[in-house]
Image (cartoon, rainbow, N blue to C red; front, side):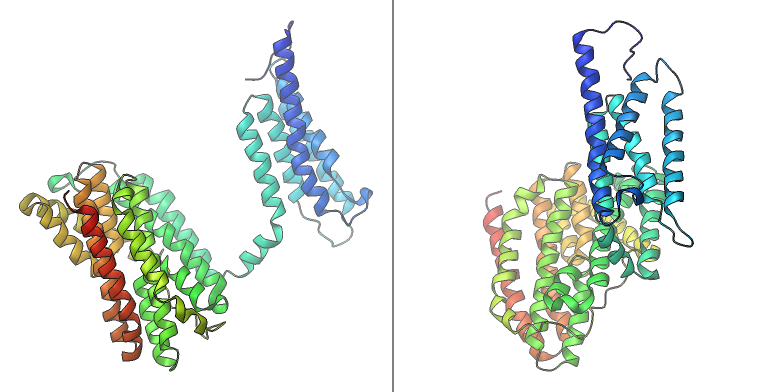
Amino acid sequence: MPVDTGGLVNDADNLNVIYMLALSLALGLIIGVEREWRERDHEGGARPAGVRTFGLISLSGGVAGILNERFPGLFSTGLVFVLVVMTIAYWRRSHGDKFMGVTTIFAGFAAYGCGGLAAAGAFVPATATAVSVALVLGVKERLHRFVSRLDQTEIFAALQFLLIAAVIWPLAPNENFGPYDAINPFEIWLMVVLISGLSFVGYISVRVFRASRGILGAAILGGFVSSTAVTLSFARMGRRQPGLESTFAVAIIIATTIMIARVAIIAGIVWPPLLPRIGTPVVVMILSGVVLPAFQLKQQPKKIAETPEVANPLELVPALFFAGLLSIIMLASRWLEATFGPEGVYAVAFASGLADVDALTLSVSRFARDGLDLQVASIAIIVAVVTNTLVKIGLTAIAGSAAMMRHAARALIVVAIAGAASAAATFAGG
């Protein structure tokens, strides 16, 4: 709350006011340093606001915020004054058709607001805001380069993610439905948002960096979207480029390894106590997937002629399909568990691993949070991961060449066996 300076104040109050004003000044200086550095090539008279100006703007916000309780409307009046003065300064700086932009005006608005937040005692939000503003201003070139590499597909994908995360998810009912109360639309859609978000990061990375980062980078980024799609894509690319079968096989192994790490991330987000249970098998599989093909990486070309074919993971129809698949797996898991015990869950894990390991991981992680035995859930996740790893061999054989399949199979079989053996040793004796 703003400090009332209408009466006598003690030393503690004075120190508090001094701290608020000092913080207000410091936050303005943080933003001002970036602005003055950005405009360093301009003479002082041609620069509408620098480090001193921003410091004074933020300090003014602090003073106005402190006095606003005694003089209502002072803070708002000061904000209008700051915006008018900065707008006039920019108008005087502009010449002819040269548009100087309004970023500094809004930075001044933010600096004044930071001073007000500090005066209200919101020290952490005020500091976070000032640092965030300076950071956004400082990465101007990187942001522009990033946006310039996007096309309509990526922008539309981002809008679809906002639809999935900010519109559909909050409207979903947060209640359990169906047999065994296995279906909760709110939680199911939250899991869709989680998977879509992880996939979207990988998708944008693949689209932005494209093939220029080499086959290994493409495999790593693509693995965060869909290791199955990347496997099919690399297998087809290897068939079209004879002599590079082992290189593309390595890429498939790396993408599969990323899938294994991704599963651990998902399980840890949904129910962290699962991580210690699946940690050893996951680490063993990842190390096997990294170490075994390492000697072949010297043959990796600097660039590849094609970008892996990865579909936009944020299309609404695939999201609805994934939500439906997740619901089916949840229902099947609950029914089979009630009918056959843990063996029923393992059967669902095996069947799910043939197609989509993410849905199974989300399902059993949620059930573990709701009371499913941690060991049963952990074994089910490892069963799905091992199954999906072996499936990559068949996909490589179907879409690629026999030579590529042999290269990939040698490592993937070892990865699967290592994971199964490690899981058996970890879970032995309950």
